[in-house]
Length: 316
Image 1 (spheres, rainbow, N blue to C red):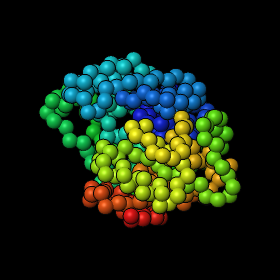
Image 2 (tube, rainbow, N blue to C red):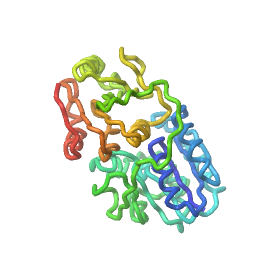
Image 3 (spheres, rainbow, N blue to C red):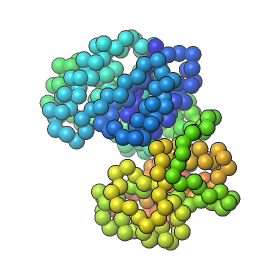
Image 4 (cartoon, helix red, strand yellow):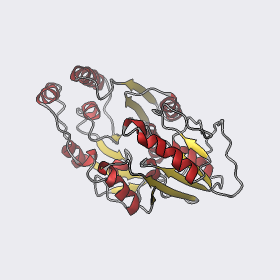
């Protein structure tokens, strides 16, 4: 049996493709996350049907105190003792102490990785730097015999599956995997997009008030300036704009792919959502990142990544 560990709906979407590649083999799916909402549950239910065994493990939020991290690691370590030996283990979050604790005793399993998202092609991201740990956490990991470092784990990876074709990744041996669906997503949306062969303009929302509240007013300017048709909200957005919203249990990548496969054309706008990099390979989709004066220098790297990947950056 193979083990595949995911932490986000986007990872579940990629995991679904990997399971199909190894369709003759059995899979144990483990979702390891502090979130539990309709999107997570939709993808979990969709993918678990293709696996022999599945578990949804709810952890404490990452920003909780160290005692909660201890509880998580203890639980995950005990759980791992009851798991069988696996032929192959697939995962995305090589930086995660929780994930590494889960797999630390499987010395003989072949390790495969896949994309977590844009961090894989942002070369100063958490996937390229060993996380700093304090003495308390170091002691906990020592007691749990969870001493699998990120570099040691990288050294065991046989193949990395990536949606970013031709891009450098966490290891050199990569295998391209396409997100394009060869199935029909059966979902009733509250918004039926109008296909009159004109590009449909969608803005991808973000919880920007957590960064700078003034950015929220900038979004109104962008919606009006570019005559946006629909708004695709982020789950953490609390305020609604005066525009028609797309209410879907699909993540944005899956949503757009389902319509592109039907012949729709799109113009996608966002401030700095990395989601647009995940759909940059799609035909019939034009991508725009809008940069405003209220974004500080800490976001300069993501705009450089957008430019390198042929995404149009517009200053307003």
